[in-house]
Structures are given as structure tokens and as C-alpha cells.
Length: 578
Image (cartoon, rainbow, N blue to C red; front, side, top):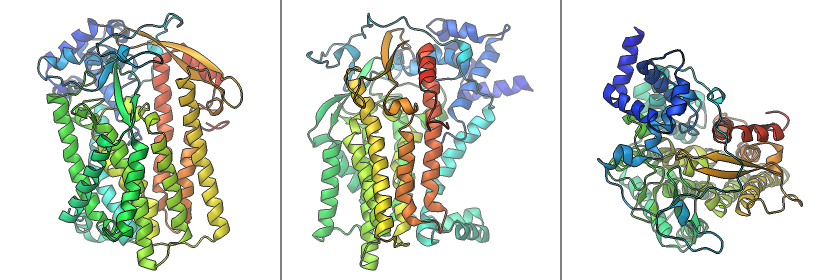
């Protein structure tokens, strides 16, 4: 029975020949030592491959990892062997898997040595990173230190397919509940109970209309043009696993200002009424659900046929490739970065535009804007403004530098952000709450303080990295740990781990003010209904899980240096608690 299960599972991944080829690749590359360490008690190759797949897939698709899911950084000993060896082709040796089949395209991804340094010109020739002579000797974490998972392959694929199938209808159900069911989950449940799940969902699911498509494509085209044409400073992202350095044009704040000024001006001069967007919101979400799914199929095909850089490749499983993505830095041409567009210029920009839209719609409905809506809109706009002020820092985070462009991140930014993240304002349109000046100002100031602390945490770390630790934090020299590590290509590198300032309170303290910020722009809705707080709950789960994933990733990357860091900064998120 177990053997039959293994055979069926391996058949889903590809032929035995392909599996053996991957295993052979692992044993002939840097993954050989890890692979040998993974084989315990004479474990057969078939059993090992079965265990690798089960462990890898289970870690990728833990049910709680909704949109904060990890890439396969830590998969236990066997999984790390596959990651370092056979699946290294997906990050560090794309040519070994795809170059003979799928041609690569040039892009603005520079080799590491071509990075601009202070007092140096950027080079155009390919080069390898230079190891730092001052770095202490690298330490690889032991196989025993890697976390292990126990989920079955069945649970793995059930989790993934559930997310693929449940998230789209949830977006429509949330919109319907907010706009047509008075924010009451009970009323929506009664509708589905009375009509049946499928018929009830079909009855409330709006079909995409031409007006919705025009709004979506008009907004997307406008943002794409701004991304390409507005001036901005050159910014180089972190070195990729393949040794490439992505080059960006930092013009997000300019695009944000132009977008809001244009949107408000069109309303002021009677050229376009933003209330139309709210009136067609269900149709827009429906169009985004289907259109973004098609867009993710395009990304999957592009990753196979025309990858933009060597930071791409296949896991050998079509579902996983579609879900996680094929490319780390997909681009159209040399200058249009797809992830910057989906994550920043469409997702985050639509957040600000919809916040303004909800405010205008309430004004047109009631002739005034309630102080609860003003607080909600102001805090959301301040938060998004902070994001675009710091956009280049976001390009160094896990979303851009680590997660590939697939369904989970691109569909999430194109659909989940405009719907779920803006939902408190969506609720307030039809539920104006009069807080009174004292309570409204108190909530506003508390929210601004949290947003500032969140920004200052990111600024503090970015300044620490920019100056290579030669800066002042809270009036004194920063405390740090010099950590060395090795890339999948065997190159030695050094990182500085900040252990003072905000980052001395906990390893992910910046998540605390971010969650509190979301609470403060939601609490103006008060507590008549639960649904406005869904985003706060979702964000809390996402960030706590992300903190765990990041700790696991850093533990695998830095080994004993991360243990030193954890001893010095013992709390993960909330100082003194967690």
C-alpha cells in the first residue's frame, strides 16, 4: 500500500527517470554532502525521493501560510539536499535544467561585480562576487538543526488546491457582505443556506462588465506608463541566488503623487466620478479574480518559454510552479519589472485610490463625510504614503527578493490587496459612525504614531545596512553581530545583524506597530459587526507566521551566528511575550 502510494505520488511529479536525474544532480553537486546526511539507515533512493517530496510540499503549503507562504528555504535534511542539489537549478543553475529547451532573455539584472559601489562605476561584464577577506569562516547549519514537517502529500495538495479555489469566492462574499448584507456574516450565511452553496454563490457573483474592464485596464495602463516614464534614481536590489543584481528606477513616490492628484482632479473638474468605481466594485473584483488568474497563467508560460534571467526554473510540478511562480524577477523587456507593477503600482496604489473612492462615495451619498471615515482614510493614506516613501526598501524584502512571481503573490497583490486590505473603508461607506472630536483625534494620533514607529524600524535597519553599521542608533553606535554564510554557489558572504534600537527589542518588532496601525484604521467602525476586523486578524496571522518563516530561513542561512543573535535578542515579535 505504501509503495503504491509512493508510485502514484512520484507519477504526479514526473517520471522515475526525471526523479533519478534530479537525485543524480544532487549527488554530483554541492548537495551531495547534505544528501548523504539525509539518507539514514540505508534508505533507498525511491524512499528518499518520496520523503523529499512529501517534506518539501508540506512545508511549502502549511494551511496557515495563506499569503505569507515561504519559498522552500528549510525542508529538513532531505529537503535541503534537494534544494541545494537537484533543485538548485531553480535558483542557481537555470541552464542545467532549461537552457537547452527554453531560451533566456536579457534583462537589467546585473552580475554581482557590476553593482555600483561608492566611488566605483558599474560594470557591464558578468562577474562573480568577491569573498570578503575580513569575514569569519562560514558555518553551515547541521542537518539536525533544520525543522521537519510531518504533513502528508495528500494534505499538502489539498491545502494548495483549497487556497486556489476558496480565495476567489471569498473576495466576492466579502464584498457582498459589506455592501449588500449590511456587514452581517449571518445574513450572508442565511442566503447561502436558503439557496444552496453553489446556487447562492452564483446568485450574488456579479459578472464582469465592460465598465469594469475599462476601469481596470485604464488604471493599469496609467500606472504602467508612470512606472516606465517618470524619472527616478537608480536603485540596485540585493544579490540574487544566481548572483544577479536587479536594477530598478525608484519613482514610486512620484507615481503615487501623480496618481492621487490626477484622480482627485478628474473628480473636482467633473471629468470622472470616483463613485462609479464603488458602484461597479463587485464587477471589478469579479474581473480581477478571472483576469489575474489568466495573468498568472501568462507568468507560468513565460517562465517556461522566455525567462528574464537565470533566477528562474521549474520544480518539475506544474501546480507548484503555477502557485509559487517560475521567475524571481520577471520582466517585459529590459525595464518593466512585473513584480514591482503587481505588488506596488497596482496593488498598493489601488489601496490608496480605493480609500479615496470610499470617502468620496460616502460624501455623495450623505452630503458629508463622517469622522470615522476621515480617520480611516487618513490613516490608510498615511500608511500607503509611507510605503511609497520607502518603496526601494520594500524591494529588498522577502516579497520581492525571495518569493517568485506566481499565483500566491501576484494574484494576491492584484486581487487580495484591493479587496481585503481596503475592506474597513468599504464597510464604513454604508455605516457612517460619528466618533466625536476627542475619540476621533485620539484614534488618529495613535494610528499615526504606530505608522511612524513602523517606518522608523525599517528606516533604522536600512540606514544600518547602507552605512555598513557605521551609523548612530538612538544616539550611540549600533550593536551588531558579523555573520558569514555561503550561497548555494559556494561563495562566502558577510551580513551584519543589528541587535540594538528597535531591533534589540525583538527580532521582528516592526510587526507590532504594523498590526496596531491596521487596528486603528479599523476601530472607527466600532464593534457592531465582526467582518471589518477580518483584515486585522488575517494580518496578525500572516505576520506571526512570516516572523517564524524568516527565523527559520535565517537559522538555516547563518547557523551559529543566528543562535548568537537569538541569545542576544530572545523575543521573536512582542518583547517579553513572544
